[in-house]
Length: 326
Image (tube, rainbow, N blue to C red; front, side, top):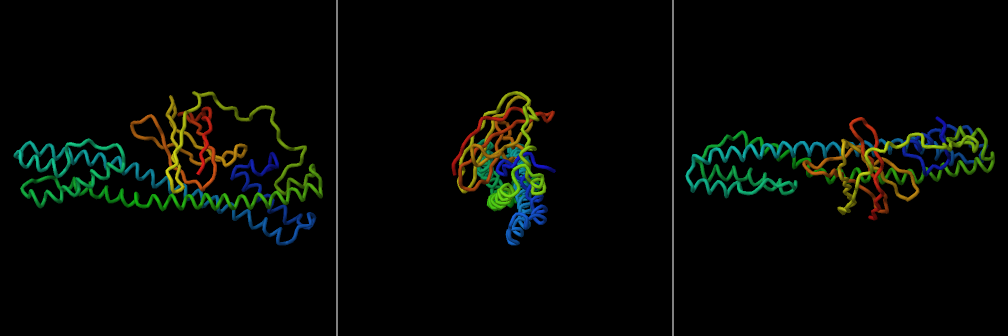
């Protein structure tokens, strides 16, 4: 597939990987014509599969991160439902108990408090109920509750905490994969620019052999008179904001808009650099008109934007760009 331009910095990662692979094939044929050494040739040839592997690792790590967050979201829903079931069961049994036992159970299980919306606070009340049941068996042996409800609650809590404890490690692995890919790409861009400038110097800027190196002769550079994929003006840009969470973590939030069912986040490291899709799907906050995702980023200055998607998979207008410095 012929490239449309010669600015490697504008390539998406996928486009750049393809360009590198084309260059690797062409450099094996033309490195002597370009007065390149065998070491220089070998560096270009070795880079292409290395970069493709880095993209694969980054994709796998991002998928693992999405998977563990999805699993936590589903477990949290189950955990909330099971907690409420236990709470209702306790209330149902309390009507048959004396006032002293009733008060003791309220104290053990903290029944007068509301179910927290925040995840960290939810875990505290669930843990208290689990410990409260064990405490009740010792202090109030005459009170009989359905043990399976509390066993199931404890199992859900244990499974949730196992994934919860692994989130930090998954974030670090994802951040490392992103950083390694970025460093490798910077090295690859230098290699390909060297090949391009050497070819233009020796062959000129309109030689068809540039195509064999993953570049475009000047006369074939693609310059459309209008956008090939015009944005559908539905229903207008969403409002977004970002927050530095520390430890290489950024939280991105978008205000939901009418008919929006999904969307994707893009980021870039320079005002004129290429946009790269960072997150394919939004993550909803249950019951709130906001969607959020956490992202691992290496230190530096980054710009972000969000594009909404409706049920017909039509793209709306991208949001305004926000700038964050880490």
